[in-house]
Length: 180
Ligand SMILES: Cc1cc2nc3c(=O)[nH]c(=O)nc-3n(C[C@H](O)[C@H](O)[C@H](O)COP(=O)(O)O)c2cc1C
Image (cartoon, rainbow, N blue to C red; front, side, top):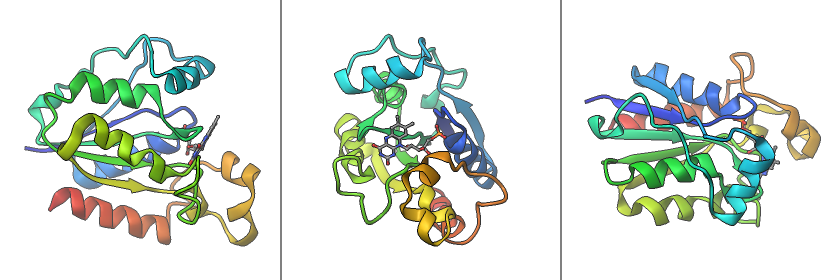
């Protein structure tokens, strides 16, 4: 059975990552559609751990042996569209791989807003079904000083022109993990 890539993206980087992973894994990709897709509300729902939920996926996650879930991190939270997806489908997920294109770097991963604070939240919902969590920090596509500049990190989007070098290597290793 093929994997299925599922994603939520507001500004496009996680959409790019999801589509790229799906192309390499030669599988289908589908966007999560929150019932209320308003950024301010989604950010609030992430923090208060309540939300109006997501529309049903067109694909049945139970028909796939591996699910790759992609999405951003906001304010150190597992954002509500990703959390809603995991809660809604956890019973039918066999193996989960989580990937995030995020603003925090490998150096900052353990801070309040670091990606490593979100990985245990994914595992808390799906338990041992979560095989691997991988961050794709946007700083990997920036040069020198820009890596540490908040505005450069927030403005940059993944694209064919910058998905090279360290981030491409990380993606190749991730695809190998999902495929093995
Ligand atoms: C309001 C806001 C809060 C954010 N908070 C975090 C954070 O706490 N940790 C982090 O690693 N990245 C954070 N980011 C950066 C996003 O995760 C990053 O820009 C991501 O690539 C956006 O994905 P998208 O283009 O798919 O929407 C934040 C971005 C926004 C807009």
